[in-house]
Image 1 (cartoon, rainbow, N blue to C red):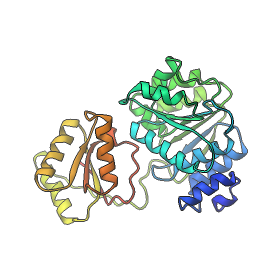
Image 2 (image 1 turned 180 degrees about the vertical axis):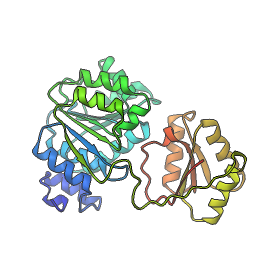
Image 3 (image 1 turned 135 degrees about the horizontal axis):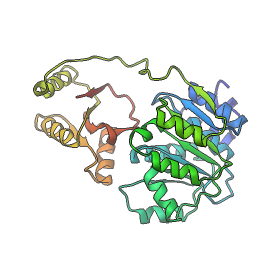
Image 4 (image 1 turned 90 degrees about the vertical axis):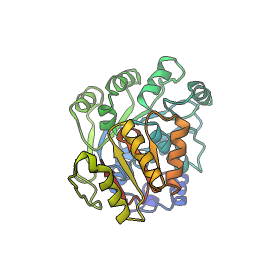
Amino acid sequence: METFKDSGLHPQIVKGVDALGFVEPTPIQKMSIEHLLENTTDLIAFAQTGTGKTAAFSLPILHQLEEDVQHVQAIILAPTRELCLQIATDIKSYSKFIPVKVTAVYGGAPITKQIKELQQRPQIVVGTPGRTLDLIDRRKLRIENVQFLVLDEADEMMSMGFQDELDAILANTPEYKQTLCYSATMPDGMKKLTKKYLHNPKEISAGKRNISASNVSHELYVVSAKHTYEAMRRIMDFNPDMYGIVFCRTRRETQSIAEKLITDGYRAEALHGDLSQAQRDEVMNRFRNRKLNVMVATDVAARGIDVNELTHVINV
């Protein structure tokens, strides 16, 4: 498999991928697609963020969906609302030429609206663990016919405390389904979960685990806490074309740094959990559209976000 055209995927799916300008699959896409088109066994895939994991699992799932069957056939779990929306958007792009319905469900948004969307009988549901389990418990998300269950950024979901929700969801889905786990690392909690629920999984890996992307250079500046802001400003002033994210540990610190940057004339905004979903969406849209130079964010709020052409990521 050198290109998507010789992947064995449905021609209309290939047409959708081609319309996006994708020709050659990334290593994780190649390995995932080949395995999922030829096998029904569970899968554990190790890959870094930004390697094309969404297409790696969604394209073969789209290929195997029963388009005329109007019930949920695939559930994709992701750690954050932003990542859920991004995955759903990507899948809609890939399935542009086939009749597939995709719905995203996540906290911080009215559940009544999401229930109405589920009543439209989507074949694919992308959700955060908490909201997905809530909808299952309310019997608004029916999972008895699920054929595929995907855990995307699985290690991040574990580190964010979603182990109980994942356990409950996995326990209630059909035994005879294909479970796909995509992760950068394998923490102990995830080992227990996969051992409990995955059956003789195939393991694949795109590159070495637990390493930084090869096209990223790292620099460490040791400064006292009181000089952190000035040091960060100096980096920004030396890089006037900077388009980046500043990560902070707390919401208060995030808001404080963003306000200082705005006062000092930088095009910056904050992204953290105290903002409403609409406000967070607005910040992300402004950042993606380059109306901001810098987005200051807590690591949890920005986890899993995919933004192209960043020049800098600063951890303070």
